[in-house]
Image 1 (tube, helix red, strand yellow):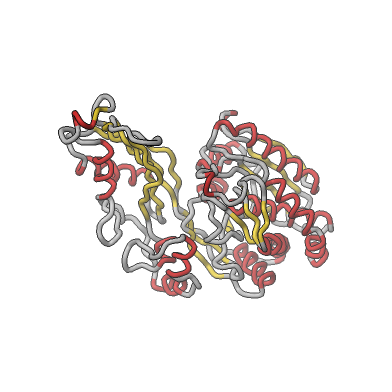
Image 2 (cartoon, rainbow, N blue to C red; image 1 turned 120 degrees about the vertical axis):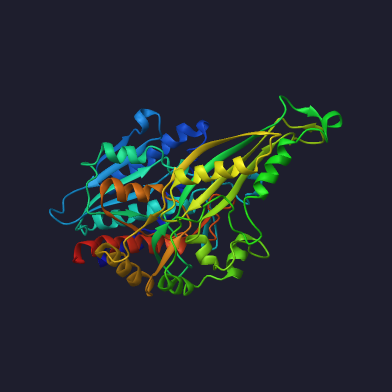
Length: 459
């Protein structure tokens, strides 16, 4: 193990150079004009896996060729030692609004100890950290477990073909444990083991009024403006205490135990720090819950985008014929996406006026997940993090939705360890996304130690 860690330390500079090259690829999976870039991203990952000594590397299609590619590789020379399936993704979010970036989003820029680029935190640095850990072990003949790795290109659009891919390749992907590196730490120097992730429902809510845009001087005041009607409906989706008003929305939501609330309260995360990370003067949300609970253990409803009428330069006095809101809900364990859609439609039937028509279009759905905190694989991760950072990691509920975690657990029937090194203020999905470079290197060491520990820690 010391040989592998020494190898990784000696190769910090080339590892950083590879990270910059990786970040330069505009692998935006949600935009069709970047489909060729996503393919190039898959080829980059495959080439690097081959160069570091992984075997049977292949770029595999998803969705019968209609989806984005996925890269597979393995190294299976450890006999009856455990087999670890590693998960990562190489696709990224769009960069809008571009004018709010201080540095070019696909030109990695280092300022102090931080690297800025789209995908730096979510999750190219973490994907590459796992690859570099495996490289260090392979190059020093220190790998004592079997490894399979899959790096997909559709995570940022909800991994629509991932579960299907797992079902189609169950034998190929057979393993003892899965490692999902798409995760966060509590703070820069306090590592985390994530044991719960929220699910996701994503909708477009369309409101329709007149047959076409109308002159506001002729029709203003006599028809119900769809933009106004949409705003009124959205405004009613929360009450004065920040609670979601959809009928029965909280009925199935998992309630935290007193023990869990006490443990979460020990996390060094304050309202002030969270507000500072968000760039706001004061937080808002469901009363009687801490910021840690609201961001990891409570369900939410958020407006992600609005579209209505004339939004160009200057003025145009029209009443729009239609208006649209993109709305997402983060779900906690026991909440089901199909129930959430029904609750949204029930709310609209009860509150939408007869002056407009409405339509709900579901774009994505993913189940929440609750993981095993006591498995030997979790202990292996805990020991690896403590050895690297010098402090015991904390257990954390993460507000993100990572549908693949549920897919790995359900389709392959194995425990999943969620261990990553992003930070809450990394700006993921927004302008100026960044990653704290010391944790890129500590991530490499932690993953290397994890692979060693899995072979050593007994059930």
